Image (tube, rainbow, N blue to C red; front, side):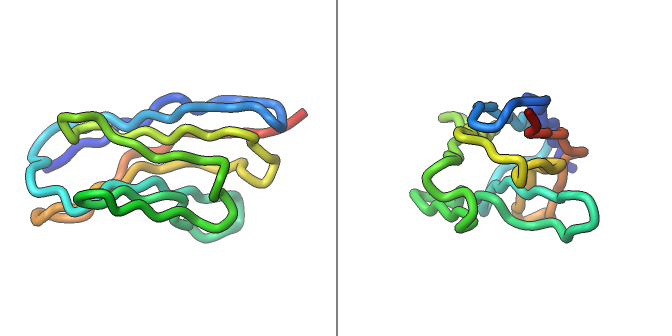
Length: 115
């Protein structure tokens, strides 16, 4: 099993920044990719950013140029630097990890962007 724990969410004004962290434990070898998803009220969960094996990076069009995904050298933590936040970025942000043993999710961290 793999455990994912997100942190770093909170309340921020429009134009502000937050840095989300996702730490992992358990059987995490052979990771195919780690991602951040988000789910706003009454909306479907959507992919925000993905970091795959090697140098593969993907971003949702709505966050390109504002968000940056990265991971540590050990490969057991992933981060999401969020700049120039907008009210429409308000959502619960979830960390996701895929490896040969499954597709794993954290419990999420709330990000609220409001004046």
